[in-house]
Amino acid sequence: MKHDKAIIWIILFLLPTLLLFIAIYGLPLLTVIATAFTDWRLSKPLTFVGLDNFKRLLFQDDNARRAILNTVVWVLIQSTLHVALGTLLAFLAFRRKRIWNALSISYMIPNIISPVVRGMIFLFVFNPQYGLVNSFIRRFINPEFTQNWFFDPSTAFFTVTLGWFLFAAIVMLLIHAQMATISQSILESAMIDGASDFQIKIHIILPLIKPMIGTCIILSATSMLKEFEFIYVTTQGGPGNVTLSLPLYLYKTALLENNYGYANTIGVLLIVFGILIILGINRLFLVNKDAE
Image (cartoon, rainbow, N blue to C red; front, top):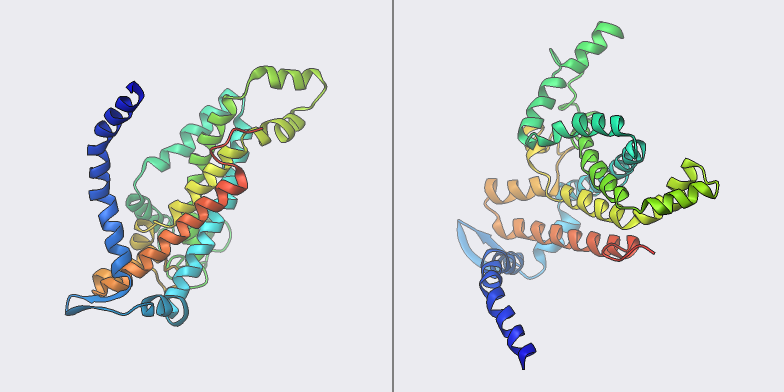
């Protein structure tokens, strides 16, 4: 009886928060999913079109195809190279206080800056006339060198990709924090048994931090599914849609073309991508499970 009363009280206390969550997130999500199957524009009445929006998005729209490809490539880069770099830096700084202090301060400061400001800084650094990169190359390598990094189709994608390079700092912090929770007795026992520092990191520490690596991959990959500001400030998806992403294409479709139904179809695709990433990484890295 007391147990039943406790459950009732728990439900009553959680109910306001649950209702607020449904109102803020649940209803808008249902609206997005429902209107993804419609032709919804400000200039005409809303009409149901079934799967036409999804067929157009996946098989007929060249801009969408480019945005999907770019987003997938950026997700792969973010969840592999950046996570690997952050993990490597965490191993490098593990039990080395001076290295950790230097890396954490120098690497984290740029992450405090908003994506918009970071985009403006990158526009200055890669400016073809007075940017630091071109000035350095002209000074030490080729006096005649000139390159419009953000607006040349051959370099725009690479230059935009560099804008997320600093996300490895977040991975470094999370991995290093997880490594700090490993019992010292385990590491000392391995040292007594004759294991080298490299062997300890590969055969003991790495398996123990595997769930955290999975968490970092999820954070890295899903962050790319909502990346908008940096691309908008630097290239706005150009030149020729070379740097177009799904979030930016959603923005252009909704606010510039007033095609809200098709924009919500793009939103549904992003949600599906996010769910698949989370489920796949959870299964592969045993995230939320105790390391054996």
